[in-house]
Length: 358
Image 1 (tube, one colour):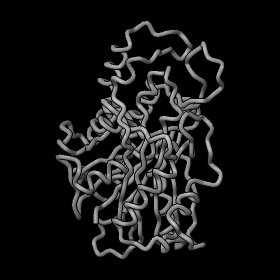
Image 2 (cartoon, rainbow, N blue to C red):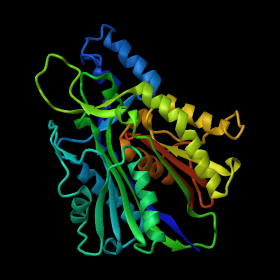
Image 3 (tube, rainbow, N blue to C red):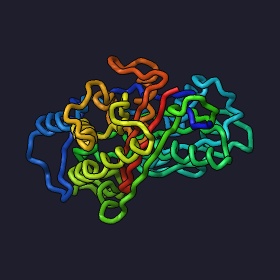
């Protein structure tokens, strides 16, 4: 029996730490361009209580998303001990391409995956690099896609990366901008023969709603009505995103776990997109509630949003790498553990993957 197995992982965490207190000098406006008369200290304090974020990481001026992706990829390759020339596919999930420091000009040609292939020194023409634009669930969609290619006999190894430099598309006058951060996470996925049917990618589910939901996370100009710049920034209708996620993510997670053949009692951990601490906690509670479980097991949901912020496609692979390598106190995974990945983001898109650790 062949299954898609994660044989190596890596992440790049930028060194620049931006604390909540660093936003106290900001001037915030509403979506309609009205100055918020609430003291900034109160705005920042409320933000921290809702999201759980105390600090986040920003990439240094000379580093692009493709650079962060390459750094994470190098660690994943070393961890898997694979020859880079034997990689069949390089899938890079992102949303904004390479954006220079203090610039809103995105650069996506050639693809970031092609740039990563070059930076890794991979000369094999049979190694196919391509980008995946799927909102925050992009890295997880890359896993689903690679697994499908493996089953189709098209490939046997894939480097799947999530990388983002969101700090370069945030509006300093939008309080929601405090949630976003930079980073990259990667893994090597290989199609291997396994004796244990509980190992590897066991099941997946994907959902997409593209009616009014396309307006929940979008691009628009600054909230500051006093500027003439025409730069576009990432915007979010936080309440709409929260309601959508809570309504649909738990059921997608349940469908995925049910399809795996394992039950809720078998689940060791849930690696959920680090979007908002309160939202993620509500999703997990609702998910367990679908099984009639009112007491969510302790230590089932590792989180790094408190010190890393929301780095979009990079959150899950970064979190997975931290836990896998034992750097998250109180959390660990071992061979035979059943875990669940889940994410939601712009589109709106949702996906989930049930995985048996090898």
